[in-house]
Image 1 (tube, one colour):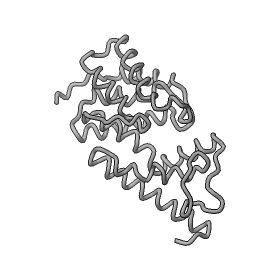
Image 2 (image 1 turned 90 degrees about the vertical axis):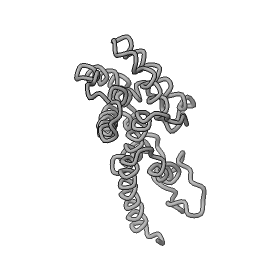
Image 3 (image 1 turned 45 degrees about the vertical axis):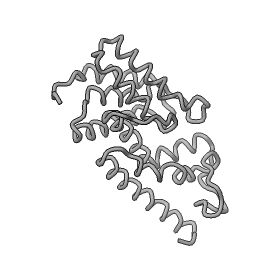
Image 4 (image 1 turned 180 degrees about the vertical axis):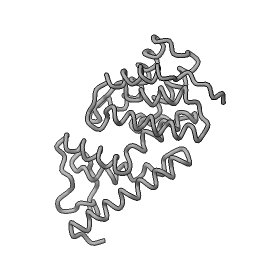
Length: 217
């Protein structure tokens, strides 16, 4: 791949401004975007992928923010992809990258369920999902649960050992319903390795919580 990149500091600043203007729900804010960009950059460089696609897609993957409780949630990535290519196109970003950027954004979402068919799309998806794991992932999960007034855990069965998990009521259940499965769903070798490291940390948190609550191992 040609090492020359169209995505220079000018485009980074433009995309940063557009991302910031999308607003925040606490867990999805500019710092989340910046972490996804940093991770996607690292994964993209390691894979020799096209950063002219990866970077604008990473910056703009949440440029239309839809609350996770909103019934339109599964449309959020499509709305973001559509808006991203409009913003980039009107500002004069190279047209040959638009289709790939749109696909990378629309396929990053868990809710949309769209298969990423390019390396660049897989990298953006991995970078976004890695931010749901580890210390930062747990912090984001608990922050949203608090905002939504969800209990931390079921008082009689915190780990869901004899009940169905329900992350609409118990925030801890989200780790079992979704987050524990993310490492094996990551697309790149580097992403999976990092995902396993981050989930191991989260498993340690669960083990410590169980110990403090006096639960049987």
